[in-house]
Image (cartoon, rainbow, N blue to C red; front, side, top):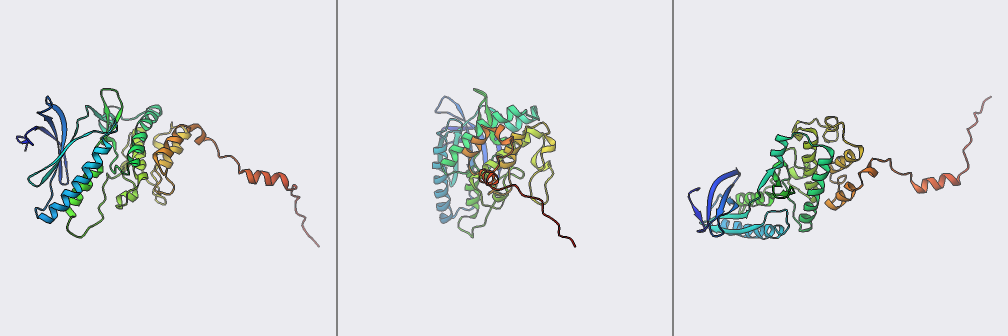
Length: 302
C-alpha cells in the first residue's frame, strides 16, 4: 500500500494508525509541492453492489460534514475525498504539532491555570461543531493537537469517520447499536450508543481531569451509587470553583451536566461565583420578614 500513488497524486509515506476498518497514513500531495497531508483509508467488508451503494451514500454525506467543519481554523480542512476500486479515502490537512497525550507524557500534571487555558481553547471549537449538528464522539488527549505555529489546540479525528466504518460493517444487514468512543473518556450514554452534544463535554472534562490528576480516568475510583469518578483527592489544590465546574461537566446523568458548550463557557468565565454559596431564596427571605417571630410552645402538664 505504501508504494501506491493514490489518484496519481498522493504518495503515502508511513502509517499513522489503524482501527477497525480504517487505516491512517501520512502522505504528500505531489501536485501541491509535496505538501504533507493525512489520508484515512476506509475499507468496506463487502463488495456487493447494494452494500457499496449504501457505503458510498454514507461516505459522501460524512465527507460533506467534514468539509463544512474544516472551515473552522482549528479543525483540519478536508482537502479531498474519493473512491478507488471500491474503497474510500479522506484527505485532510496535516497538523504540525504534538498531541495532548504526548504532552501529558512530557508533563504529567497541569496547573489550574493551564487547565483553564485548555478549556478556553477547546470549548469554542465544541460550540462550533455542535452548531453544525455534529457530535465529535471521541474527544480524548490523543485527539487534541497543540499546533507548533501558535500553540493553539486543534480538534482532530472525528468519530464520524468511525461511524462510517461501523455503517460499512452493518449496512445491508440488521442494524445494531454500536458504541463509538474511548473507555474512560466516553460518557455513559455514548457507550450505550446514544451520544448527545453534552457527551463531548463529558469527554473534555475527563481529559482535563487526566491533566489535573496525572491519572487516566480508568485508574480513578468510582462512587458505586452514582457512577461519578472520585478524582478530587488526586487534585487537592484545585480551587472550589473549578472543582464544581468539572463536577458538572462530568456528571454521569445528562440531565445534571452542562447542556451546551456555550453554557459551560459562561460558567468558566465566572469560576469565583461557582465557589460561593448559593444566595438565599428571595421569596423565602421576604416571607420571614412578614411573619411574626415564633414563640416557644408551652408544655401542658397536670
